[in-house]
Length: 344
Ligand code: ADE
Ligand code: ZN
Image: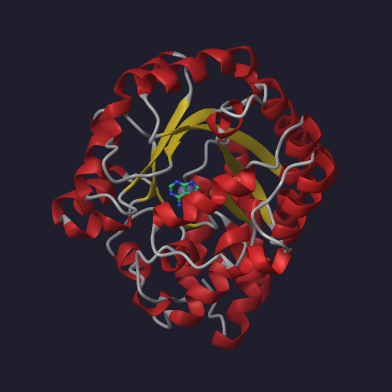
């Protein structure tokens, strides 16, 4: 690879093509859109203004964030609301040179309020199709189960989603991690595997390395979301590296939710140097202070040991770790090579 002058690295981080694999679409709801949808749908918010809502975005841990995140999502009622939320994210993703996005959504958050799952999925699907046609962004959906709810609730949700099976490529597991180990969802993930759905799970964000192991062994996941606590078990790091099991890491999220005290203390460089298939993602960008390019630029600024080689590796990993076709992966990797050649 050609040498890249350090002062040209931030521009290259922004310009290089990349895939985003860990993005909760409800976490892309900006305060302005929350207020617009609340007014349109007649939903009362416990905040007087956009500024007051933003001021509440100071989180002590994952749960304190989730409480506000679910309150924000309560303004979503109709298919058009879901379309507008996803479209706003996809326009931002395109501006960040995201060529492929695998987007998480939490149907139980909405069906529990009486919103039909059809409205959720059709609205998101419409935005994904339009993004491909108008923005050139490939966009796919991953249905997530909320781990603080029961497995029976997850199984029932899966059944109601099956008429729309062709609109999502896989399933995930998110929400409150501690006290809700992956094995709680063994049956529903086994059913998803039979259905040919891809499988991912949040593990090792706040939870222990044992949760990463049970996500692999019991849920048979193909990626781990976050996974940063794997470093507490050298044997697990070796296993993840050997299997090239992707970790979708979200640096700004990890600092906002106090998984690491500062970005400078983030273990991303150590994970890369251990040979892990790490990717950089934005998680809930409206709440954590930045979309994917901001995650790249701020992380590289805070960790000067990260090099242009690491930038290339992170983008290449994002294509490798995606559920896209081999042809698409090869095409995006060629585009990545061109971006590096042009910057050298
Ligand atoms: N839902 C949205 N963001 C999440 C995160 N960072 N961890 C677990 N569940 C989530
Ligand atoms: Zn997440």
